[in-house]
Image (cartoon, rainbow, N blue to C red; front, side):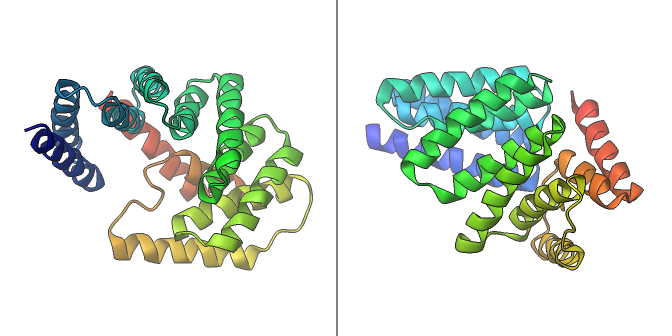
Length: 243
């Protein structure tokens, strides 16, 4: 019976992820809540921690940043109790703090996550964390550190590869940092990456910028094309409408 309940919980969580990919928020929440209740019943703290992390991502995507932080914190508490790694939830929690304007707190969490990822030698996560750090340093007008972290992400991606969306995120920060430091950046490379991301998003029927307003805003900043600024504004407006 215990194993059956675990299987049911896992299937419900799997369904929540499918609905998340389709943008069906209410269905995503419903199935994730179902899974979480099952894992509470069987007292599986590891899987319960994973569900709390998922809910943190859910509320982040929907602009409810206080709730997302609470879920990430609970996920971290549960992971501590069962001796599991906490780095992914720490990294994820940095984003809502950043959007809330608590930049230094976000920076501290990212530095902690980066150290944990480095200890485990998880290159993909190191690269992602470096990009988040580049965003924070860019917001602080610390272009040298923004370049330092984005350049590290570029080097890692050249080793392990990455999706077109990952490529555009990494290179935008790399090129913006160069722009503000009066270093010529590779404009042909940028336009190639933008085109590849457009084709990839269209073929896979996914959001061009992963529903993130920061990415099109940084593209506007880099290229000074107001169409990107309009996209960023629309993303923010959609978040506000859903609150």
